[in-house]
View 1 (tube, rainbow, N blue to C red):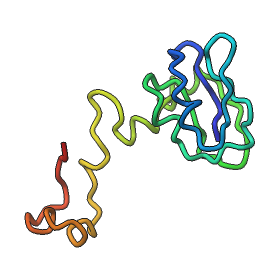
View 2: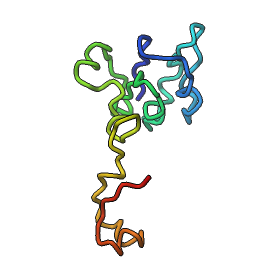
View 3: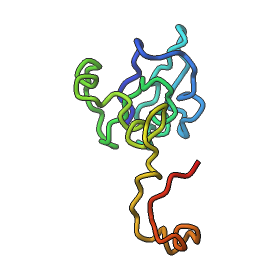
Length: 122
């Protein structure tokens, strides 16, 4: 569930407010989104994935709030880590580029003909 919006990193783009499917955020008076309905978070990670500055942390604990400290998340490399894992953002390897799922050769004819399951798609 969503646990943190970093006031230091947030650039007030409000993308998290726009993309959240359960309307968890409210726009704050200072422009920084506020987690207004944490209990409605479905732990879909969409907000974290769309945040262009890695200012959000969604805990994989879907049903229990977790007390987190921003400095600890930064130290452990967790603030914005989902976006990094899926390869969103400049200079990051896209998840599709390292996909080794065996079934891709069977469902995508280009992959099957070339006999390789890993390709960079642009």
